[in-house]
Length: 385
Image (tube, rainbow, N blue to C red; front, side, top):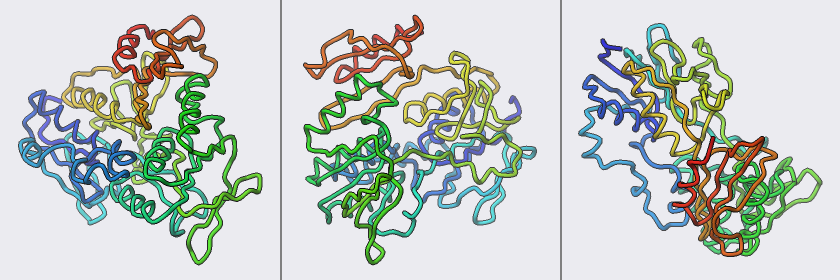
C-alpha cells in the first residue's frame, strides 16, 4: 500500500505493539493509532500466571516497554475504549465511547477471552486469568485461602497449579484429559509432567468432567464433578481455554470461524489484517487454517503483518513454538505433537530431568519437546519437516 498514510491497530496487546514496532522498523513514518479496551499500556501476559500471581513481580514489571520507548514510536494510544464495530469497506472502527476511527489499513489484534462454565458468573471465589486485574484478584483470593481447585489441565491450568503449590495451598487439578498438557505434549512427556505435579503435592483428578459448582451465600464451596463427587474448594480457577474476541465484528462481513479467518498473508479483507490470538490464517506449510495462542506467535506474526500492510505480500508459515515454566521445569515445544506421533528421547534422559524428545508420524518429524534443555531443543527444531 504505497499510499499508506494511517494505520489503525485494534488491540493494545503484545501483538498490537509488535505490529507498530515492526512498521516503524520497516521505515513506515505515517500516522499510527492503537486502540485498547483495557486501561493499561501494553503489558506481557505470560508472567501473570507465574511471577505476578506468586508476588515475585510487581505489576509494573509486566510493562512491555518503558514509556520513553512508546513515545519514540510516535503512535497515539487510545485506551479504555473497546471496539464495537468495523466497516471493512471504509476501514472504519466504531468504539464503545462513540468514536469513529478510519485508516488506510486496520490490524485486528483483539486477542481472546477466557472460556467460562455455566454458573460461574457472579459466584464469589471463582476466577479466570487473562488480564492483569484477573491475576491480582486471584492472588488476593489465594492469600486468604487454603484449598484451590483448578478446572483445566492445559498450559494455563498447569502453570496456575504449580504457582499455587509454591504459595503453600492445597491444590487439586481436574479436567477431561488423562494427564496435564496431554494434547500439547503427548503421553510420554505429559506423564512426566503429571509425576512432577504429584511429587509437588498437587492432587490430580484427571479424566473427569465438571458440571457445576456448590456454593453458600453466593460464594463457591466446591466443584461438582460429572460423576457426582464434589471437590471442596475455597477458591476455583477456570482455565479451559479461550475464545477469540470477535463478537465486535459480527455483521462486518468478515469470515469469523474460531477467529478472524485470513489468507496466508494474514489478510481478512482488502486493507484489513489480523494478528495474534484472534487470527486464524492459512498456513502454507501445514496446508491448514491455524490459530496459535502464545506469546512467540504474537511477535513473529506481527512482523509478517507489518510487512504485508506495507505491500510486501509475504506468506506467514512459522514453525509453531511455545514454552511453559512449572516449578523447576522449563518446557519448550517446537512444531506439533499430533495424536499417534511416536516419541523418541534423543538427548538426555527422563530420569535426569533433562531431555529432548522428538515426535515422528508417517515418516516425518512433526515436533520437538525439550525439558530443561532449551538449547538442544532449539537445535533439534531443524529436523522438523
